[in-house]
Every structure is written in C-alpha cells, then in structure tokens.
Image 1: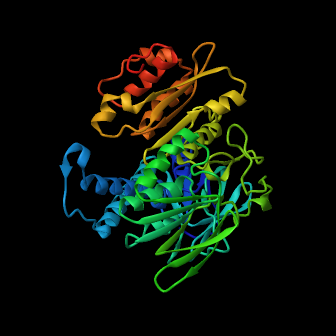
Image 2: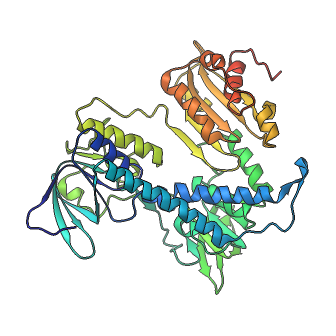
Image 3: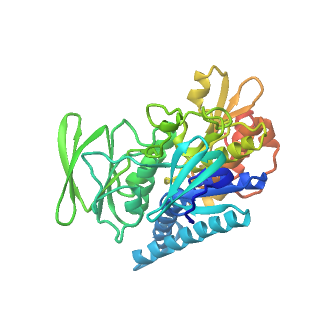
Amino acid sequence: MVVGDFPEEVDTLVVGAGPGGYVAAIRAAQKGQKVTIVDKGNLGGVCLNVGCIPSKALISAGHRFEHAKGSEDMGIVAENVSVNFDKVQEWKGQIVNKLTGGVESLLKANKVDIVKGEAYFVDKNTVKIMDEKQSQTYKFNNCIIATGSRTIELKQFPYSDRVLDSTGALNLKEIPGKLVVIGGGYIGTELSGAYASFGSEVTILEGTKDILGGFEKGMTQLVKKRLKKKGIDIVTEAMAQGVEETDNGVKVTYEVKGEEKTIEADYLLVTVGRRPNTDEMGLEDIGLDLDDKGLIKIDKQCRTNLDNIYAIGDIVEGPQLAHKASYEGKIAAEAISGEKSEIDYLGIPAVVFSDPELASVGHSEDSAKEAGYEIVAKKFPFAANGRALSLNDTDGFVKLVTRKSDGLVIGAQVAGPNASDLIAELGLAVEAGMTAEDLSLTIHAHPTLGETVMEAAEVVLGMPIHTA
C-alpha cells in the first residue's frame, strides 16, 4: 500500500475477499469496472481458510479412516489401521493453500487490484484502508460490502486452548480422546461426526428438542442413528451453564430437565451461531441502515439505503451460506453495471455434510402446506437403488414436493449418499419450473445414485417401477 496525499480512485471497491467478495469483484471486472478488493485476512475468507473447505477435508479424511478399517458386510478385513493426524492437517492445509492461491490468480487475471488492510468508511464515497503501518484513502463510485461473519463467543465459555470455536477445532494438533460440543447445528454436527470417525468420544449438548433444526425430522433421524452408531451421545434440551479448565482438559456443567450434570473432556467446542462483521467500520456514521442484529438492509439488487453502496453474504438477511454470498455478489456487480438482475432465493439449496448427507431446496412438505399449496409429496428410498446397494450405503431417500394441479416441482429433500451433489438437479428443477414428468422423462444413466431423482418423480406420478 502506498501512502499519498491524494486518494486512489476506483469504479468499484469490494470490502471483503470471501466467496461473496471475490466473486463480486471478478464479475464487476468482467463487466468493465475498475475494481479494487480489500481484506485484512487471507483471500477466500472464512469459507476457504477456516470453514467450508477445511471442514469438508477433515470430514473426508475421517470417512477414509473408517473405510480403511474394513467392512465385514463386504468381506473386507483390515488390521492395524492408524491415523497420522499431523499428516491429515498438513494435507488439509495444502488444499486450503491451493484454493486461496487460485483465488489470487483469478483476481489478478481479471485485473482486480488486491489491497491488504481494514476499511473504515469516511463518507458514502470514501474509505480509509489501514494496515499495521499506514493508511490510504480510496474514493469509489460504488462499493460492495462483503465482510462476512464471526463466531459468537459466550461470556461463560471464553475461547482458550481448551475451549474452541470452529477454527480452533479444525486446527487441533491431536485427535481428542473426549470432545464436548455445544450446539447441534450444521457446524456442531459435522465436526462431531468428523472427530468421532477418527475415534473421539463425543457428546453433543443441544439446547432445543432436536439437532439440525430446519431439516425435516425424517432426515435428522437418519443422522442421529449414524451418530449414535459412531458412539456419539446426543443430549437435547440441554442448557450449558459453564466450563472449568483443568490441567489437561475441561469440565463442562449443563442442565437437563432441572438436573445439573457435569462432563469432563479434553476439549470443548462451542458452535452457537455467528454474528455479522458490520461493527467498527463507520457504517452507521455514514447513515447506512442496519437492523438490531447488525445486518445491513438491502433491496432486491443488494443495494443499501445509500444508492452506491451494496451489501452481500452473511451481513444481510438470510441463511449464512457461501453459495448465497457468491450469488448475491454477482447480482450486486451486475446491478452496478445497470443490468436488471435481482435476487431470487427460490432455488437456493441447503446442505449439511453429516453422515448421511442432508440437502434441501425450495419448499418442504410443511412449508408448502403453510404457503397454501395443494401438494403431492412422495419419496424414493436409496435401499431400492442399485448403486446405493453396491456402495453399501442405503440409508435415506429422495423426496419431491410437487403442486397437485400440474406436478410442478416446488421443493425437494435428499438424505443419503451424495445428497450434496444430487440436490443440484433438483435445484434446477425448482428454478426452471420443471414438473415431475420432466424429471421422469429425463434419461438417467444406470446404475447411478442420480436415478433416485427419476424414480422419485415416477412415484409422484403414481407409476413407480422399482417400488411397490
């Protein structure tokens, strides 16, 4: 960064280089804008560095270890299988470095200027970007704020070497003998499963009646069954009270049905949500509208109440998903270019990389009924799919939610192997206004897991081939 008396001038300034910010910057540059992107951390944001990517790597490594131990059902016997966890962490780091390096290359290829530092807004057209040594003023015509979110730290559970947030859990130097996890949402469930796969004794403390709120009970039941098979103890309606750190671990106190209990472990992982990074940036000083949660208010084009400033990702209303942020980044960049693009979350999928994987798009059966639809909702089980049988992974189903009058696909849920991939076709069906007949007439390769989508459509039509 060069310090000067005169401000740098750019068409579009993007603040934050996560999956929303860097995608917005590239799309804006593709539309002919002169773009500068600024971030105080590594390119790729939380997702690439300490979130989506490293967590999936750890989950995959855990699955590999489980598979390596053999499968008696398939006649596979293995002995003396072990984990070199240092090597696992090294491999995970290589993936992160490759992807963050790729982001830098993509930005440079699209002639986006990259600046390291923190942004503080002076007015609706000016920011100061500061690092540890110096500052530089930037003038912009338009700005896209994509600063993401951070984990919520509870007062009674301050983070330390033994009390971890998700970042700390992903970067452990050892496999915990015992791990307590507060929170049974996406992150808590995924990391609980990953460490249980490596052999950790895991306890999940969830404050509500069930884990993975937002998914149908029939889906979460499958996950709970697998988690318990891994030896995970799931305690619901459990209110965590406090933690006492010992010389080599933690002692966690929680309450269930009025009874106070204590559990000891090597580490405590706290996953109780995230808060938007909208503080200490001067946003309110320049008149930007925020709600009481610190989220920035936007319109259908991601535009704030200040007509040249846009906001995307975790700092605006909606699910905190990387693919939502990327989608909004494209909309904002196109809106700045004068295009009529606007956000439409109809086909946005939700995925949790649990065991088995869960994925959902559009309406659930309950939400469709609440919205006033007359529906037909039917399932096809993986147990009737040849590929799932050959994988020895048959728990789960594909479920279609269709409008009764014409078979329009308005939602879908998948619980089972490769649900995170299968949901893409179903998202396309929802987005493109396809019907169950469209899906049934689409020829799917055999034998594949993808056939379950076609088969589910045939169940909806009342003409199933492979179920009675």
